Image 1 (cartoon, rainbow, N blue to C red):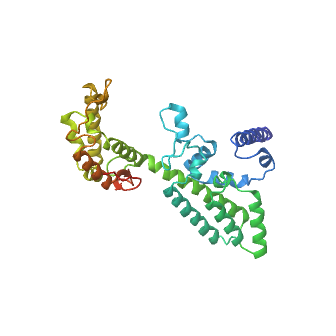
Image 2 (cartoon, one colour):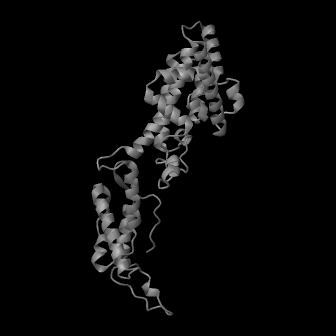
Image 3 (cartoon, rainbow, N blue to C red):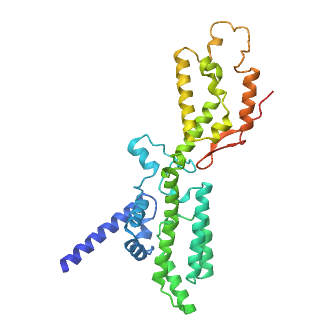
Length: 328
C-alpha cells in the first residue's frame, strides 16, 4: 500500500512538471503561477472527472492544442488552408476558437455569457464579482479563464462572501460550477465552428462548401466572351438571378460547363490576347458580343444591378455591396 502511494505521488509530480512545462512553452501560464498554486486545480480535476468522458477529452485537446483545427491539419497534410472557417483569419490556432470575432460566433459567445450571468445570479454571487466576470468575458478576457483555470482567489472571495452573508452555500461547489460554465462557453464556440465545417444543408453541402461554390461562380461571372468559342458563349447569357437562387447542383453544373468551355477555348488557341499580337495594332473593331459591345455592356450592367453572388447561410443571395458603377 505504501509503495502504491509513493508511485502515485511520483506520477503526480511528473505530470505536474510536464503540465508546468507545457503551459510555459505554449505561453499560457508562467511557471511562477503554476508553482505557487495560484490556479484552483482542485476544481479543474473534479469537473473533468465528473463530466461526460468525451467532454473531458475535448477539454484536454483544447488545452493541448491537439484537436481538429485547420492549423494542425495544415501541418499534417499541407492541403488544408490554415484559416478560420467562420471569419477567415489566419492562422486558426487553439486560442482562436475562443477569440474569433465572426459576427455569428460573437452572438453565440454573448449568449453564453448571458447564461453564465444567469447562473451566477441563481447562486447568489456577489454583484461586484458578477459584473467583473461578465464585463471581462465580453471583452474576451484571457485564455486561462475560458479554459476553466480560475484563480484560487475566487475560492477565497466566495468563502468570505458566504460567511459575511450567512449563505447556505459551499465555496468549492460554486468554483466547480463556475469552471464548468466557463468551459461550456468555449465548447459552444467549438461546436458552432464544427457545424460550419461539417453540417450539411438542403443541397447536401456544408456552409464552407457553399461559400466556396459561390466564390467560384463569382469569379466565372466576369469571363470575357471573347475568350470562349462561339458555341459556348451562351453560358454567359443565362439569367444569373435564377442561377443564384437555384439549387447548388445547377451552379455546380454551370461551373463545370464554364471550366470545360474555357479549356476548349485554350486548346483552340483562343485567349483574348491575339488581337494585339505583332508589331502594329489592328484597326479597332467592336464585335457583336465582346468587351465594349452594346450587348456585353448591357449584360454587365444587369449583373451589376443583380449584384455579386455571396454566401448567406445554406442558400445563395445577391447583394450590391462593393460594386463599382459601370461607366457608360
